[in-house]
Length: 87
Length: 391
Image (cartoon, rainbow over all chains, first blue to last red; front, top):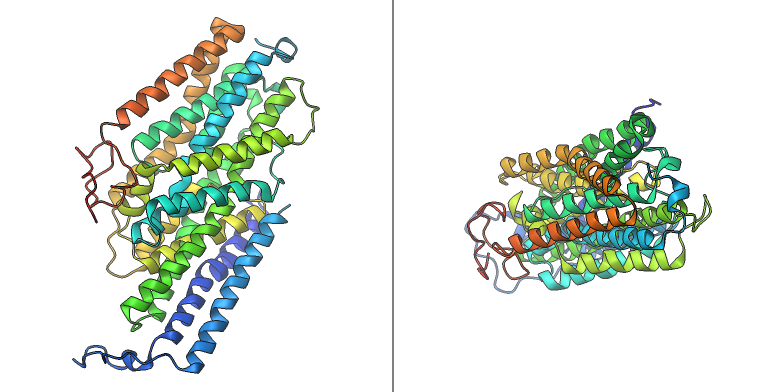
């Protein structure tokens, strides 16, 4: 602990900040990816025109997406809780 | 020297200070709307008017969520027992003038730094160098200001890189729609955190003034009317929307896409909330700007206008000394004329300066209709901001 820089607080902010601030959007992205129809990711440049009737995401994808989004929402709720109880 | 005994019970002076503090709170709100909403407005996640309305309501809610900081913003920075009503007034004058000046130039700058600079400048003029706690000022204000944009920027770079990597191949339509929703959520968190942090700063200033005036005991908490009026002032300010600053943050710094916007606002929300949890005072503006820059660096092929970033950096360096100079000047003028007449005179001059800046801004207006127009330079420099042009 340095009298000029609160190193203890600083490293916590960086580490937890990366987990929450970068991890949550990444988790959200995983959820979105799970919702995307699988056929489109295979070969986007091969000239295969996207099928006119885009298939609905599979059940497995929906479940994964649901888990991701709920986790993100829970983290936001924790954020609000931490505002209310800060100090 | 105006002593505390001299000003005790001076209700005219106190009214001037409270009015100025609420005015500062208003500028704080509208200067910082962009921190939360600029990216959502730029990507079309929310229409401009709706975005500022949402942010305004969340700022109002945020102001009532927690009162842990409401003690005083000045503690640890100046010797609070040497702070008089005139010092508080002069400090606020410095803060407001800097906020409106940077708004005119379309530059995001820290409202807390403006306030601290003003109060420190006024304290220097009123009580001398010994009344300023230089170590506290460096460790609590200057160093965090250097570190916060770097930390937030780093988080945003990693977040942006990850979201683009993970959603590679996801159809554009789904990706855009999903991240625009995510942006609204993350920007709402930033608004809420902003209301909690920044409204409390003004509550602290008014409480400090009431204590200096003898209206409250030395360790009193903010009275209810102070909490309510500060919450309303910052919320109204947010709703007024500092469109000039929003434009710079949303369009000037980086051309933002929805995934970048969500990554930037998540980084801001996380860093702001964590820093208040761990008692590290960061400026919302520095964090938000660092995040937006980071989201530009993290996306391959995104253009970052470093010249705009450099202008901001210069403004940040100047914030403390410039607001301090105005604060010191205001104090010296008020003190030279003396008493309530002196403070009233400075108040009138301040209002005249603010009116002048407002009138000057009408020559290159930025409003909800042209906030997203193609970037052609900062508002005060561009000949005209194309009115009503669609991006």
